[in-house]
Image (cartoon, rainbow, N blue to C red; front, side, top):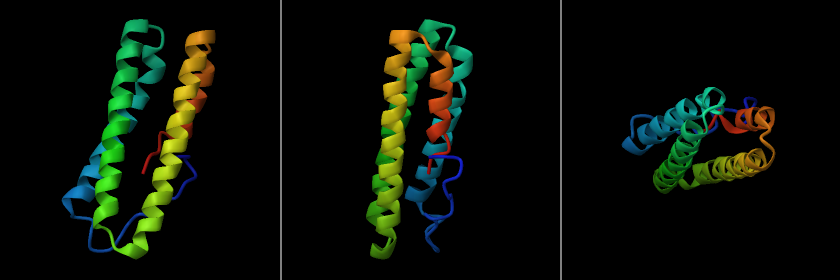
Length: 122
């Protein structure tokens, strides 16, 4: 999500120690770590392609974790989870489109700017 997105809107009292919540946090941190490698690995095409594969895998795992949390939170918290999921999907698609443009135009600056659009995931 954007750096300006709130990070505390998904805290549901009493669920912080839940395994699904912990998994969501773990997956978000992992995605951030992989995304942080993008600028350094863009100059090495092979390493960059491997990083892109890791990003895709991390996004998939994070979405699975979001869905798991959605199933366990109270009904009144589900809209917030769903909203953050939609935002995450939106920024993931923007990043994907930016990567496509990069491989057409080799515009590294654009990829770095887009990466920052969703590197502060839920």
